[in-house]
Every structure is written in structure tokens, then in C-alpha cells.
Image (tube, rainbow, N blue to C red; front, side):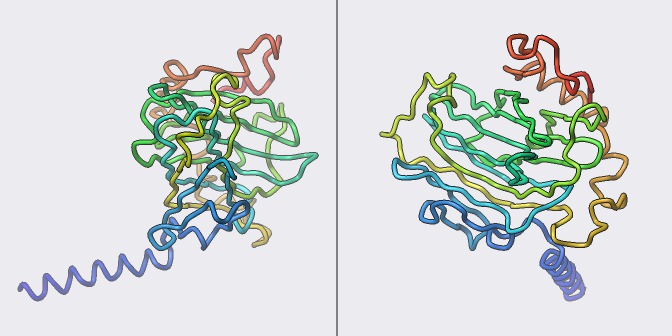
Length: 286
């Protein structure tokens, strides 16, 4: 019966391989993305399944999705700059590329001095209004290994995830603008920002540590591509619009509270110098 067992194993892995080749995500870099800045500073690895971004004194670099999307989820696995990365910013974000009424959803990873925690800043622009910064110190070393960073965007809310931990929720409460109609591209950049990135600009880049490297893999975009079927964005059968994605579940809510209690270091909602009265979205809950 060994031959039958071996045949069944072969068929199983053949079916898995076929299904992943047709439906499998994540994609290779070139399938969904293009280099937008400093091609010499982005290197494709593992046959395009991973990339290396390079920052040196000559240039940073960046890439963007070939298409734009209206609702869905985007995620990437990223390994950030190790050691002394002060003054650097690795960004992963969505942007409508419409200046006056821009919609934008930002992850910005702010470099550190050796031994200090990495900070991730999130920001949200809706219909041109931004200035909604929150900062969280990561509870692990994001330069030691890859971690998954995701943005879920549907008609009900926007959720930023670090692995399976929701670190930010922005509700479509009806009281403030919410990105509903402008498709957004997916972008990433690695650049110098030592005028503000680390301790408000007090810590400058140590160029003797250059070049700086960040690594990406598992490029996963699931959403309504534009141009595409006109009814996609309003289709309630899209998986990201399902009931269990319309609000955090009980487990996610506990994780969210844990992050905010133990690791949040700045929230614009609590900054009385900027907002003596908290903006209305701050009272929308999760």
C-alpha cells in the first residue's frame, strides 16, 4: 500500500501547489508593485518574493502598487533596520494621491538608538484632514525577524494590526469624514527624517552605520482594484465586509486595550495643547 500512500501524498501537494499558483497570496513584488524612487536602492531577493530597501547618504528609496484599491486589506512582512537606526523612517501606507482632499492611512516606523524600543506612528487623513498621530512602542525587536503589519479598511472602520494585535481603530461614526470614495495606492519608503523622527529630532542619523537596510516579503493585497468591476466596493459579500470584520471581537478588544495601556506613548486625542476639546472621532470607541 506504500505506492497508494505516496500517490495520495503527491496528489495532495499537487492540488496545494495548483491552488496556490492560481489563488495564492502573497504575490511577488513585481506582480503588484513598481519602484518609484531610486531603483538602485531596492534589490529583489528570492526570485522577487522579498526585497531589500537601502538608505545611504546618497538616497533613500520607495515603491508603490501598480493599481489603487477601494476597501480591503493590505499587509506586508517587514524586518526593520537593526541597531542604531535613529533618524530613519520606514513607512508603509495607503494614499489617494489627491493633494487637496487626500485620504491616507500611515504606518511610520521611527528609528531608535541602540537599546531603545522602536516606535510605530500611525496617522489617518480623511478628506484632507490629518494630524491624527498616535505612537506605540513595539513590545518586541522588529529588526530581529519579520513581523506582519496590516491595514483593514471597510465601510465600518479602519484597523491597524501588528501581527494579530490591533493597535489602532478609526470608526466610521458618521460624525467625521471617513475614506469612502477615493481609491488608494499602497506605498512604502525608507528615508532620512532626523529633523523629527527620533526624540523629536534630538537624535540624528549616525551615517557611519550606513547603509541602512529594511526587508520586505509576503506582499498581500486583497481589495477592490480600480479600475475594476464598478460594484465591487459596495458588495457586502466581500470577505472584509463580513459581520466578524465590522468591529473588534472580544479577544481583539482585550489585545487592543493591552497595547494602549502598556505601550502607547502618544495619542493626539489626549493632547490638550493641540486639542483642548478632544476631536469627535476620539469619542467613537471601538
